[in-house]
Length: 277
Length: 129
Image (cartoon, rainbow over all chains, first blue to last red; front, top):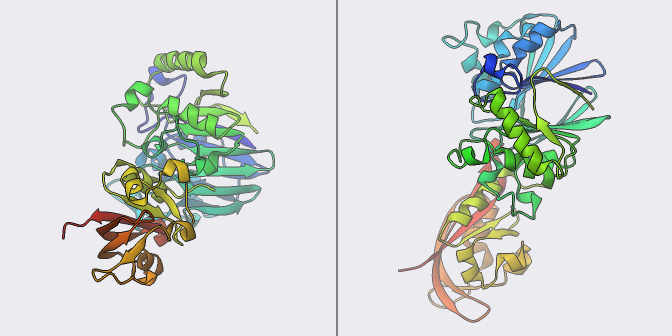
């Protein structure tokens, strides 16, 4: 299973010389194995994917954690949506309105010039919540996690490893992660348990989080503790705050390494990097 | 197996409230009760953890204003679990220690995303009527 991080930034694309090292594109992963292709979230990183390769697959699956703009803003620029010979499956969380209706808000003027109904691919939409489904060689589990609006995380199981992806998650809103003993009360725990690789929301420093509680995101310290509690093998801190430039992320990384490297294997997610499980 | 976030957030809300709150699963097992509820139950969540419906369902004797026992299926929480609707009732409870108190109970179902029935909340109000 090959994983490429095409967008690791949170909230808004932040492309500038100050973000060229960690990257400025918003959430998008490519997960590939045995000739099957998954795109996980469709933030502006999808454009980096577009530029890197020509999709020849007859089927592509897009997994959306939620429909906040930083996770779908690249969708309209994804070439296979306009290719009649490609089957595109979009998997997204159930909400009060249908997935089609909610995505249709984005695929319509004035936000976008092309209507949803004008996409020419063979489009199949799947509404998910606490769900289990299979795509080719992947067995996928989704479940709701704590973040404003319907939001899921994914546990993607392949014969060579388990990837857990929870890019937007404020579990600390409902559980003191430094005191909890019973992981059943910890949002996202079932998805993350024993994962080989966890990509987790780590938008804020511990200090910043104090003034941003309820905004839907985690501090880096909490993300580290979440990984420890769930005994994940490797953690990548993901969804970098748009105001955290390279220099600051370097500095934060050093401080965290000094304090936590003995208890959990972790690093900062870097746009364009690839991981093989 | 982790709890749905609707229950996790319900527990968190209960932990912030100064009124007794009981949180159950779909069959009435007591998943959590907050500190004000500990005073009514006469037990501490820290000590008991979750309690099976058979266990905590016998802690109180429920009586009407005339001292007659109230059938279980007329209690608000039981009705909520059966019908997935909110209920409210004022009655007397007598604890195992023999203390009687007039209370009002409001119960409501927790219906999560995709209209999934996940459990129920019962709030006990010390009655001023």
